[in-house]
Length: 77
Length: 195
Ligand SMILES: [Zn+2]
Image (cartoon, rainbow over all chains, first blue to last red):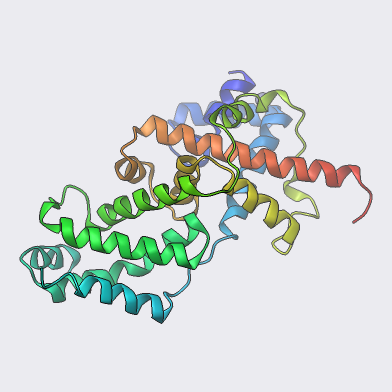
């Protein structure tokens, strides 16, 4: 497989959405090809780093209150 | 009572059961809105709109997907509507295609072990945050659902009514585009001597 085709499969490779056969082809290629190896590593790091940008927070009380208010005024209808 | 039983009761007009469902899921929906839109006001709007619509459409809910997936679907559609009105400058679909299709030609440096690659590097965070915000609305949403929220490709295809290959392609292109933005930063850092 050429680099171009390897790159196309990288996300499926990362997500483990790939057949064993293709997986082995990619792993073989990456051992020999610095460029594809770099793209794989830096893509994984990009995903990893993205996760650190977001944190879950508790709903502020005020927002929760107004949510329930908005729901309840619809009950009577 | 589990989700399914609560849904059944809520459908018969049991408002207590409906409120129980809201309590069980509201944090997920709020945080989804927060991640896609980036501020509490919009997240609060999404939250309200989602549950009002869910309440009104509950009789039509057939349970083909789980209640949570159904909620995600409603919330995501509201979030997309808001996102499309955002003033944030978006890149074009062509641009994102180009950056993923031509990636392999460029000279690539492996910055994954660069001393600048750190959680505390605020400059890097800002670059990535801006890059995510510049993704076309559906790409950004898919990226967040998959890579941040951890939803499966199958779930996302249900939520957005897109085929599996389309979801996969968009995840892939988003990742490569973001990767390239970070690469540009590391390239610049590599050329300067300050550290
Ligand atoms: Zn290669």
